[in-house]
Length: 112
Length: 111
Image 1: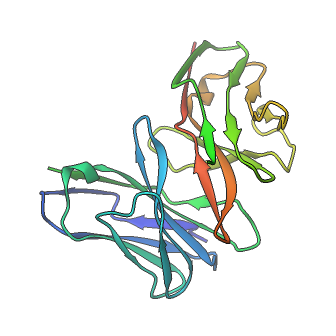
Image 2 (image 1 turned 120 degrees about the horizontal axis):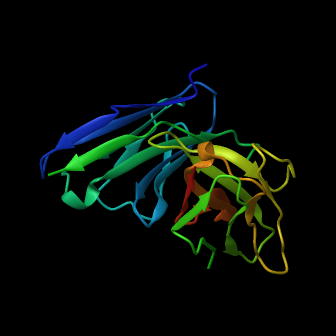
């Protein structure tokens, strides 16, 4: 039981490049979330999903897209990376009957 | 609006000293609060939730609805407690549950 995993762990992009971050969970959780963590700002919700095939915007969705084609996977895409997207990205998931969220190890992204 | 406030960015104490990390919330509904801990460059882990009313690693937190607070306390800090601590409020928004996080407090315990 690996819990919540994220790939890659680190990535450096140039402005304008695109990439996809992958989150996978093996706990059969319905809900999945993408957050970004920035110094002095805590965690802010980017997008979330309440189930396979459904996604919704969080607090800071601009510049990001997501997809949930399979229940266990939640992908976060950056179509044209900007330096303001330099951050640590965390994925989380939870069971529908509980409010506790389980977090992945994070992806450290730098956009030059 | 829903909000979680952690007024201290950094709390520095000596080993063996008592610790209190402050958390205040603003929410019109029935609050459910959590403390998450993040050790250096690791994932966030659940430390406490108010509904369980348990003590984890010597930490306790009591929900005070009158003061809208959920402060985290430990009577004797240890060096291994050094970490980032986030208070989080569970809210319902358009039928969907989400967590609202505070900005975090870094606890530094010196020998």
